[in-house]
Image (cartoon, rainbow, N blue to C red):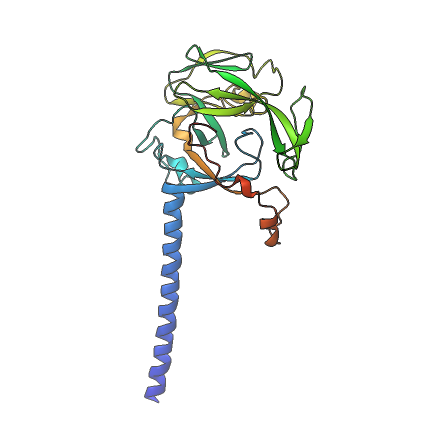
Length: 282
């Protein structure tokens, strides 16, 4: 009888030990995920076309968390909450950054074109930094594949043009230009129409502790050219920077369904994977 009781007690202890081990494993996995998400990399998905042609709707981007240091916006749910930035560093002009929109709970992605103390202007669509026009060369048209999440959408006043990609897919054609910043960073931008508000911005000085951000799809981006009262983001505090976009690790054309895992791969845009934003030319 004593032997049977000991066996039952031993079985209970074994079950408790297994439950305790499982709980420790779950806590350790969650802690590791929190550390990676907070200090190393975090995913960000692209919901709009404001960063075309560099980023498509449906792209998933890895965001490096360490380049600019850490603020409360670096952490999930803004916890721990504190003011300022630890190990802070400024971005470089041309960096593609994810940031918390001032006065909002939303995270956006744009390109840094102005640093604290810079004077930024736009004249006839040409970006001017500290009185120096940024060279812009026309490069014909950009063929964006038309898909479920990327219809042929143009801004008011522009005429939709369609064609084909190099692989024969139906595509929406946008006029593109290449900008080259003073340090040599080069990237492509879309300029669809002469927009009296977006293409003409009087010289304005970026305040200390802030950056000036613009979308690459210049006529379809409410960015630092627009005040918050106009629906834009105005100057963005450096504290609000979450991280630097590094590479596309997944991209979907919008036909995938969560309940049908096989569609995740049929909707995958394989040629998008590995596209990065840290090179000299994009």
